[in-house]
Length: 252
Image (cartoon, rainbow, N blue to C red; front, side, top):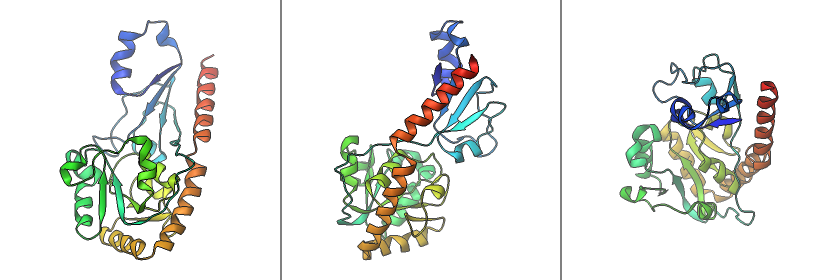
């Protein structure tokens, strides 16, 4: 089977790297992102009834025009160390976004800066020092690092459900974010965190979590239970095994 994960892989690389016989193998294209050019009217470059287009969220599949290509959705699968536990000892939120200063409104730079004026937030990730952030934290150290914060804030307007969100939930952090994209299916208000489209309401929720740490702890426990069911790595591996088996069997 051939697995593609980038447009160049599909449109260029397969013709330069693979033989004609190899290109007859069953194909799966894994699409990591929602459409960038237009949120509803962008046609995916894969238009092939014999290729399976796998999306990482139901939202992404909904927004792409998938042409005649059959589709499937496989949720993320993540792992965090068993010995990492939420403490929430820092009465502030943590934001994990790489190069947010370069990626602007889509990743919520303006939302982050507005909220940071009223709520204590630490920014982590590549390039964050330019905005007064803490810089990059090695990935294997990130779960233990964020576990000390009262809540995790995701300011991103439009993207796939980030792995950092899944990992933070599995670590036991309550989630706060914009009620857009797949976030609205992963976060239940008052149970695992809070999502709103009104930034002022988000600020109120954050203040409440800072003032009432026991409430934050309860939401974090619920978030961890939810993430362990939805994003566990065994479920992820099982879903991919099923998809690969079906694609290969169909080709036969």
